[in-house]
Image 1 (cartoon, rainbow, N blue to C red):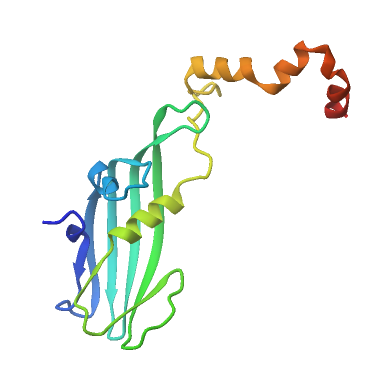
Image 2 (image 1 turned 90 degrees about the vertical axis):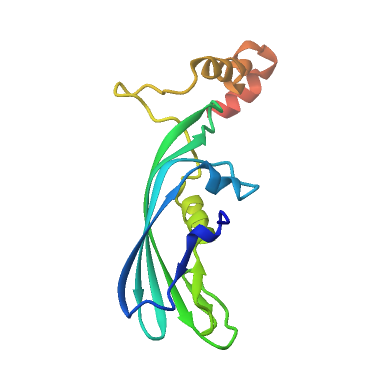
Amino acid sequence: MNKIEQYDIAYQGLKDGIHTFQFKIDNKFFEQYDISELNGKNVSVTVVLTKETTMLTLEFSISGLLNVMCDRCLDYFDMPIDLKQILYVKFSDEIQDEADEIIFVPRTESHINIAHYIYEFINLGIPLKKVHPDNKKGKSTCNKEMLERIEKLSVHNNLADESRWDEIKKIINN
């Protein structure tokens, strides 16, 4: 089975009503996308499909751990993810513009592949700034050696050592 095909939902033979599908996401899922910097660690996706005559409603619940790179120290850490998204699928024989949460499919289709939507939802659910969480004492759990290097090379420390920057330091401090 193709890696992408395992995320197909065949809705053609389903009765109108509610149907639930379960998927597991791991590194192999993210390897399909060349630009992905994510690693999946035990991510589960539950899709509740509500089938109606003219449309489908797909409710995604995505939870688990992602292994991401810290923006501060560049070490990887496990970041929990827990999000919910809804996707509406409308049946139409005409090509129509899609909205963010509404897609249109021809009435002749019998299934929908949700792999790309899962990938997008996960990427949108990740914070812009990814840093190691603080420990119970409020201290950073980032790589201590890297934090020391950052502190040593920080602009404010370098400015303090050079008297030629005294006038600029006055402007910064005001």
